[in-house]
Amino acid sequence: MAGLKAQVTIEVLTFSAIFLLAFMVVLLGIQVFGQHDNEATLGMLCNELNVRFASALTTVYTVGEGFSYRIKLPADLGGKPYAVYLKPTSQNKKTDVFVVISENGLLGKNSIRSTYEVPFYVNCSTYIVNKPGIEAGTCILPTNREYILKGEKGGIVRVI
Image (cartoon, rainbow, N blue to C red; front, side, top):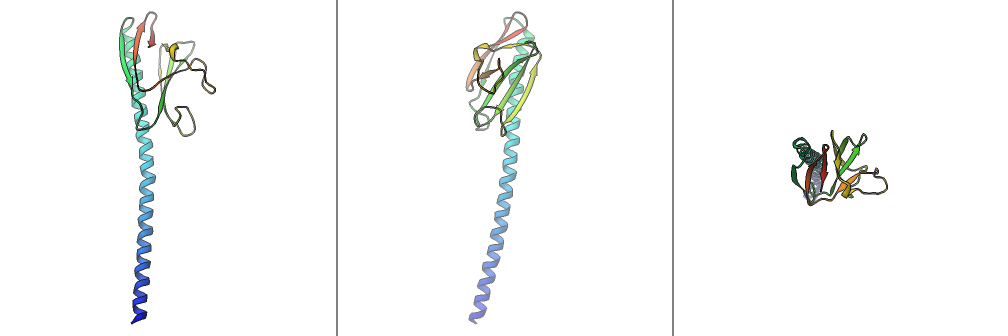
């Protein structure tokens, strides 16, 4: 009888270990897929903010001189720090708008980014940053602030 109880105990422990292992595999799978979904969500938030900001710039440019528009940048995107870059290109006839989500707000290996090009010059000279690794003339807009986008003579949009 004692041998039968020992066998039952070993079987119960074996089945418990197998079910515990299966449960851990399921939890690991949920975590991996959850991280992938989180990155996709952050990518969508990044793209949405970029399109919203670029659309505001385009609206001000289209209406023209004297028109202004207020836009507020949130403190974070999905709980992660981010940065908005404005980089004039092509002899100041176009501007690239970047939204970058990363731990330090800089482009890097683990950053999520969205890019949008507007076909006009955006004057953001107040926010030009001279940092190593960032192209000269690039502006970085501080987050958690409200900005005024103002249409000026010559088809220029100024960020104040």
